[in-house]
Length: 272
Image (cartoon, rainbow, N blue to C red; front, side, top):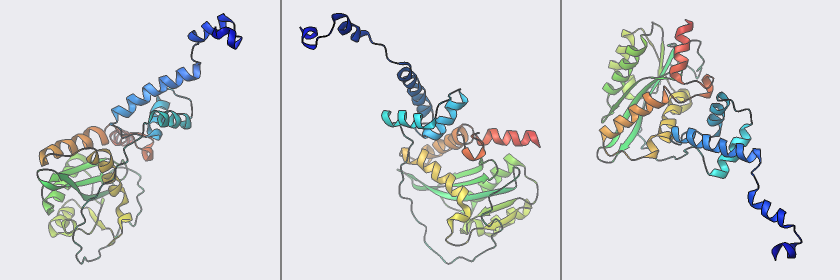
């Protein structure tokens, strides 16, 4: 009856049930399957640009626009959550010399390190604190310490971890903000012990230490704001896994040729 009404041959009607999808559609479905895997392996941290690079390394020859369209239709995107962090009490601070002057360029590892402290909230133990040290050349977090108290000891231990891991020579610049932990006599004496040059951000100028601020922002977006930590110990384990298991060894960075910090450091050491 339908064929008569539509004046359609019966063969055409039945063939419509067996129509094969075109090759472009099939390729998109295959791409989507791989995109889902990459996205899941990154725990939702990768957006289209990084997924595009990984697919290129695997032989993909299409455009990033195609990847973006496929991800948009499938509702796949990177984590973008932002949350509140407490602001420390403002106290008068003495300006100190800024050696770095926002010059983040380097020629090799262990030329310039940046350091900072950030806040991590836990349900049972309230606010805890992560001190990090990052090498500007490799973007690698070379030292870190997590603590329930924001004391000078936390920045000393993070620095010691970096020194033990990197074994730097004299003359390395260590740039920090004007926090009391970094301006303390104990921290400055430790820098002198290792013949390091202190450098300080100007008061109220986060751009002076933008690289370590960027790392902590990435840490919050990709890890901290995706969960709630029950306790200090729960947070400590999760942060260790993120920094050592993901950020340093698996997360690719556009600024270092889409390598991981650990892989880039190994290249630098092999070349020296």
